[in-house]
Length: 352
Image 1 (cartoon, rainbow, N blue to C red):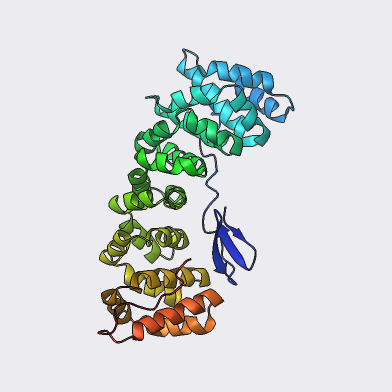
Image 2: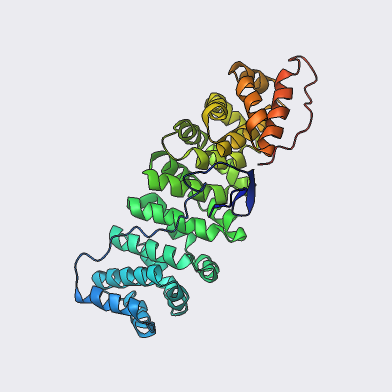
């Protein structure tokens, strides 16, 4: 998703300036990896699938698998869902074929299954189908959002991660963002961000970044307590989550309740530390966030100054990217204004 070209890095159409630092990874993972278990043994079914994956004509197999999804046998349903997810995973051209063969609705039904393994296979098959842009609208309009949110609440760890990824894919259709937010996904994604494994945290952060481009979802995320895990993850430089958390925060900070929550959760010292020791990209995001919370708030300026922000800001103003230099200089000017002076700070370009 994120792309690096030595000059600019982007995520979902948003540009984040001019970076000269070589980062180990993009800001966000692709969130498209299939993590369900493979076939447990080299059965005749798995051999049949491997042959089908190598074949140019898997249409007959796909039609049969779609019929098997509605079998009365849970074992047959599991086998069919497992094969469909692998066909969609290994051969991108099969994703559209599988959808056109009518697999989407029965797979969505499986997501609501009380059998956790069947639910997981259904979620993962839907995720793999959602990697095809042409399928996203059909998946959402067929009623996938609520079952995916249910899997995010009740599923196995793999089902939760893959449900987060599938919701991310569906949220790339703009009108789905509000529907996903209103379905109850935001608190569950915040919970995954806080308590999931590293893959779960990355998937949750990526999905939240997409969803929180909508204002009402920003409020939902703050109300769900997102600020605490974001601040904790930004403070953990060994977590590989500093960038991801900061990018999510950069979206949220445009609303007042997020700025208040950030300060209450101890975010100011963490952001100042990032400006001191973070990568160039991290420093640029951190200074932009601090600029947002200081722009019209004398108390926040005093707090930032007390944390010793001015020396690292001066260093950044001399050695950062052009955008980082500009933001650092603007923030330094704000922090140096008399505390009792005009509360209406000079306007700055604080977009990230």
